[in-house]
Amino acid sequence: MPSVQKPLLQLTGIAKAFPGTKALKGVDFSLRAGEVHALIGENGAGKSTLIKIIAGLYQQDAGTIEVEGKKVAFHSPADSLEHRIKVVYQELDLVPDLSIAENVFLGNLPKKALRAVDWQALYSRTSELLLDLGLDIDPEVPISALTVAQQQLVEIARALSRQAQIIIMDEPTSALSQTEIESLFAVIRRLQGRGVGVMYVSHKLDEIYAIADRVTVFRDGEHIATEAVADTRHKDLVTWMVGREVKDLYPRSPAVRGDVLLEVDSLSGGNIENFSLNVHAGEIVAVFGLMGSGVHNLGRLIFGDMPRAGSVRLSGEEIQAQSPMDAIRKGLGFLTENRKSDGLLLPLSVKDNITLVSVNNYANLMVINGQEERRATTDIIKKLSIKTPGIAQRIRYLSGGNQQKSLVGRWLLEDLKVLMFSEPTRGIDVGSKAEIYRLMDDMAHQGMGILVLSTELPEVMGIADRIIIIRQGKSAGRWISRQEANEQDLMTAATVQMEKVI
Image 1: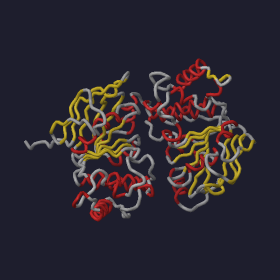
Image 2: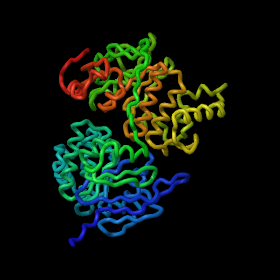
Image 3: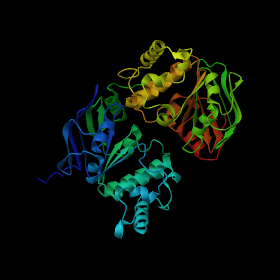
Image 4: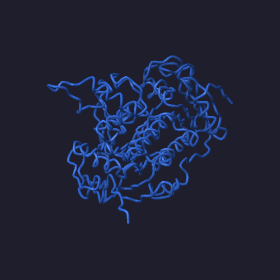
């Protein structure tokens, strides 16, 4: 019988525990040469812990790691790199002020005599790597001048500069447009053709079916299944991830539409020009646009986080420009698209993050009533089913879905009229997505107005009562109900010059 080729990477019985948590409970994972093997699971399933063990950031408590059939031990990231493994993290590990070339060969700069940097060789080798990945750009350009998609290719070029044979991609498309995603997939397929193994971690199941050969599912730190992608169904993956069948990802039910709450008239600023919309009590309005369309700036302008022209009124009252505090006082809340940098205070506790905006409600003569603050936090945790060991837990250790629910809880402690969500489910698993959508539905039924700003077309079509398209900072189409919309029309409006107003 012909010998079976050994996997590039084989993890067997990997276990890892942290105080109060068993992150991994004897899991297995393998990666073959020239394959894309997807790893999926809800937030908190153990994916990130496994990645950090492979990267040498953590050491496993039990289990073995083999690279090309040889047992290895990683005590540091340098050990992992030495075995030609490179992780491309969701939050890219690049130095913005250095050039592309300096980032690609960071820690491994080509040298001449007397250990001087060989700049000519540096730029020449970098150009070759970039062109090989389809990126025709000057290697002397600083990283800060690149798009997120270009920066990801620089990370991959860095991996190739070290002859990486195993590349791990952690949520690589979370901030990419559809065109950029297709370009990334083309690069991945070229890597496959050279025998590179790619471990692909994503919450986007459609991408798994588009790019992966095999898929492994983790749940609560345990290995649930490994199958050829072609042998699975979408609903199988969801059921394996959450441990139950998710019958309705978008639990949208009819609500009573009330008075106009939010009125935005001729809003301009940043790349937004003369944009108008309104949101009624009891409804969910979604603004859909591609990356770079202005969809994210729109929320910041309305909230007063960017200089603006035009008018923003809440229940008829004008909200001061460049004054988020005035927006909050009048009943407007905002969850940004980047919860870690703009929403959460990662070193602080769950309690401190949830009560951040409303802390004055528990203060008397500058003294905080800790008992009341703790009671309010506990009530929110129960109401939103936030999974945490306790209110004192640092929020950085919660899963993405539970961090997002904590941010929703922050605003529920305020007397809000309208809550804006920018990319409400970015980077969270399918089970947590369903819970976030249910919370939106509940808030709308309680008479709140919800404004969703999203680049996720299925999300917009699943939850919105009305849909507005933004393209190049301008309104490019409006649909009075999601039933009247279809994906082709919405995408056409977002990409092609047209005016569709019903």
